[in-house]
Length: 398
Image (cartoon, rainbow, N blue to C red; front, side, top):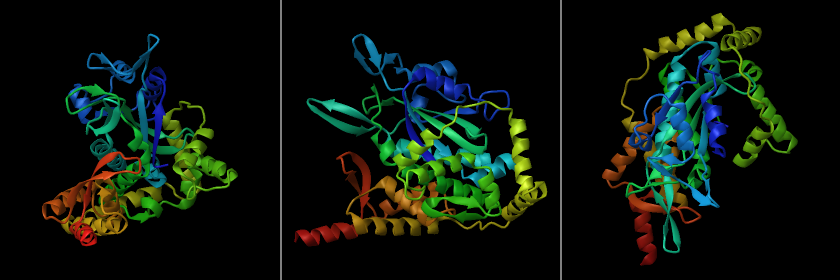
């Protein structure tokens, strides 16, 4: 799964799991960084401090204790792990071939996806008398940890984004999060990450091969090499097959169950030895050092010839297409869904920033009209409608 969401149940276990991992840094801790407006409000930036991280997971926020006290014991969910995994060919070119530019592209795409989550999905529950309502907060504290290998010891560039269970409401009060949107919009989170990563990879000069649901691989990385270095994927696919389904047909919940069922115990191996093994495997499959270096050199040469024209026109076309598509099904649609659909239309050609700017410009021109979007459970999100939809509604009312 390109983006997975799972709840954390133990603050102590989570702190140990993420901080003590030396998958990526040889002999050291995984590269980490704080992200989000709530993190800034708490004075958190740069590398993640182990003790601060553990305290926040326990619900100790700005001098107060979040959670519910029952029989003298505090009950508080630590947070949620949203994991972003790069396509296998990207991991191979970054970790086996050694093009570290791809690691930076992955990191940038993760931040774009996290900003999308913070803007559209951060919320808390407010109790007003006997009524409980969802209130958008727009701020999160997220600790990110970048790793380079899967549990099966394959090359797998991925980032764990640990969302702390705390956010400030409009009055500045710290509250626990309402996480339903993280699960409901899991596919959307993955799509935003993939769209931004595809654009970043293309800007580095690589040719991309788009697949279903905004999936992609780097052209030129042999499929047999991808398969040989995908033991974890093979194990999950086998488990899904035994359940009578496949990766394409299974639901997100079914995929997550299969991933948990096949999860191996985490082990620590020397990264230099792993990289040597990966390169030996690639060599044996005909993708030797000369072939890997040639693919990098071709990409670097292609950067000089990239079209330097403005992405504004394509982004505008993408937003118009997405709005028309969504308004065919419903009069009001979520702003985050509009961004995802537009990104799919312009996949690999424009970044999420250009899409966001085009949405704002369309709103200024009156091509999009701000409305509240209610999901099937009645939760309120920011959304849009179109002048055409408004006129259709007026016609029906008349």
